[in-house]
Structures are given as structure tokens and as C-alpha cells.
Length: 112
Length: 114
Image (cartoon, rainbow over all chains, first blue to last red; front, top):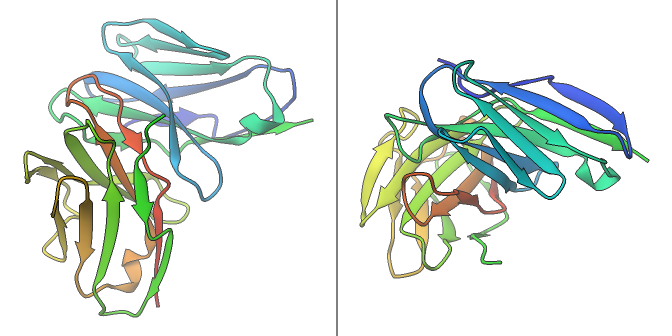
């Protein structure tokens, strides 16, 4: 089954605007992690949210988790050109520790 | 901040050749992983490794693949007899624990099989 499907697939915004992307998944999870990937580069960890948490903040990032709806959202506030990247959610299912399942990602372009 | 480091960053190899991708996980981490990302596709789990043995592997991780921790710092992925479809970015990752722990990824090794 598909896990960690992001929506939208692509997002184009101007500097200073907020960017919101969503992630849906199908099975029970231990936690959900958000990563950023610049083109052709590695995966940079942004935030981990555990299944018993509903919201976490880190700088300009805000992540929510709704386990009843099996969905998560990532909000980037006051976006900058340097936020241009692909953003992925990755779920860690309860029956499979450490085996992250990634979605296809949301490609975010922030124009100055 | 500690990092997962990977070498080489790029490798081009002929079909049928053996390739070894190397990784140095974060020093106090106990769990190690390999993932891959074929161009334009999702990041896929290959294998997890703990206490010198494979914890879990995906269906992709067949007999062509092997992993090893040859010493206290390195973690390697060996691909025997490479195929064209093995061309991908291979990511090494590590975490301190298994449950609820952040998994940190390296910059990846681009493998092109020609």
C-alpha cells in the first residue's frame, strides 16, 4: 500500500508567503518525519512527530499530525528563496521500526 | 552537527561489475540503513542493520546486495554484478535507537550503471 502521499505535488509561492503541504498515509504509525531535499542532494531531516503528538514547531516550521485521519501537514511560514526544495513525509509503521516509507514529495518553488 | 558521510559521491560502473558504497554513520548511532532513489521516483527502503546483522530488508534487497560493518565506523553496501536498473542515488542513514528516533541521511552516492 502507498504510504506518505504528499499533496500538492508542486507549489509555487513568493517570498514571504506561507507554504502548506499535506501528507496522507494508510497504516498505523510510530512516528512521521518530514525531510527536505534540494535537487540531487541528500535528505535533510526537518521534524519528527510521534504518534501521540498533535503539533510540533521548529523555527519557521509547524507540523501537525491527525492520526484519526491518518494525515499530517507541514507549514513553512515566511518562506524564503532558500526554501526551494522537495519536501517528503516518511512514515515509520508500527509493525516495522526504522523502515521509513516515503511519499513522492511536494516540490516547492519560492520566487524572490 | 554530526553527519552521515558517504563515499563516493558519484560512481560510474559497467554492467556486471561489483560496486561497494561506503558510509560512516553518526558515531553514537546503533541502527544503520540503506535506501535508494531511482531518478524521479520515491525514496525506497533497502535494508536495516543492527548489532552486526540485518534487521529487516525489502524485496529489492535480493542476493545481489549485501551489507557489512567491517570495522567500528564504516558501513558498506555491496552490489554484485550490477544491472542497468541499479542506477540510482543510494542513501545511507543512521539512528540512535529504533523507536521514535530521528533517522539521519547522508548526501548520497550516485551510481550510474552503463
